[in-house]
Amino acid sequence: MSVFQQERLLFTPATPENNAIPAIFAFPNEYTIGITSLGFQVVWATLAMRSDVDVSRLFTNLSEPLPKSPELLGFSVSWELDYINIFNLLESLDIPLHSVEREEHHPLVFGGGTVLTANPEPLADFFDVILLGDGEDLLDSFIDAYQQVRNADRQTKLRHLAQVPGVYIPSLYEVTYHSPDGEIKAIAPIDSEIPPQVHKQTYRGNTLSASTVVTEKAAWENIYMVEVVRSCPEMCRFCLASYLTLPFRTASLESSLIPAIKKGLKVTRRLGLLGASVTQHPEFEAILDYLSQPEYEDVRLSIASVRTNTLTKKLASTLAKRDTRSITIAVESGSSKVRQIVNKKLTNEEIIQAAINAKAGGLKALKLYGMVGIPGEEMSDVEETVTMMSAIKKAVPGLRLTLGCSTFVPKSHTPFQWYGVNPEAKKRLKYLEKNLRPQGIDFRPESYNWSVIQALISRGDRRLGKLLQLTREFGDSVGSYKRAFKQLRGQMPTLDYYVRDRWEAGSRILPWQHLQGALPQKTLIKHLNEALAINN
Image (tube, rainbow, N blue to C red):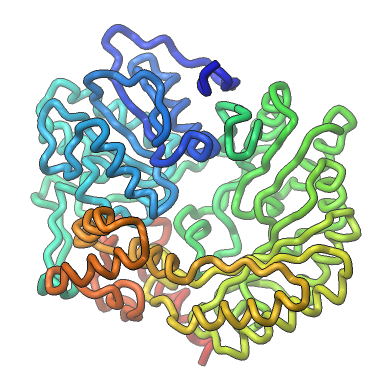
């Protein structure tokens, strides 16, 4: 039995019409990872439920039978470093990497997902079309607009699609620079018929996403996922998951969540509640009560990261009874000053209480997420993280503690987009490792060097396209990026320009300036100044 035959679908695909658009929808990674992406599942199902589209799926390791002459090729992009796989898949389909080199018989290559919505510019040369924002309305608007010009030439198609809100056609915008290795001078549409700004699209309904397929071949075996909330009301100043996706939206309990959960639990007994801040759903207690019913006794429940001061004994107990052994909370730092800077409304007492509640409810482990290199952080703040972790360990003997720690990476559309990566972060990760592991606390640092590369792609402009291609030729390592920068010296800015420098807020043109996120730049600057005031 093939992998695809083992899938249990929770929707009914349409029978494609005779003249349906032949399309490929790809995830630039292996099937087991791609099929676990709720975004990928939902977009694929949306396309498959349209009788005017005949869609096949493609992953790096397998695919459904593909059309010989696809008209559309879509990518769901959720991780920056998957760009190498995008290049590989394009080449495997004999499609030129650069949009400018594609001819009439080539499909239009489109993409969406968090990475492309946040800052598509490093990959702008490789996509014909980029969809900015939520797919609920945007995807259908895109397909409907494509149908209107389906038989036109490539340029006519692109110009027509550029009029659809949220549809960004990179080739119709020209970027000029003060010098090849200098700052951006201007970003402008090639003529007055093209909108000067593209606005990210925001779905405002109260029916959020749920799994469209369940399979034991998913990275989370047989999981059925339900999106409980979208965005996050906390607005931590570094956080893309909050700022890019505002406003905070919650799924309706009666008309959306309960029916979705019922539907999923008919085909599997593993349930995942998703969202950046699941426990802040106004009726979260009612969700717990619903799942505590005897008929769901054998359900294994997983919850995405929860807000620390909503980790109650009741929540821990419900999870423990539903075969969950650990829970994750994001604390960022043990320093109250640093938490204030990032707008994390949390005290050390609340963090310790969350750990006490986790243990009292029967959970065996608690994972905390931290970060080093946050703007305004000093070494004394990192020492406070060690003190806090020691205090938690003392308060809950027997509870297994893990601190996962990353390096601050500036993200577009957030108040900290103007900051660089702090080179001191590397030492600070080492300090935490040296001081936590001997206490029996599991310390899991993310790679500092790869954080630098993540920052490069998250703050990059179109000149990065050349660098990404070169890096791929040199091999997928941090050293390859440095070698590529060396080779392109004079043709683009240095690595430091993209990742280290603090860019002065409001005084320079950002690579994504023509793409409007949830909040205008002046609001982001206001939030940045509030953070700076705490540090002064």
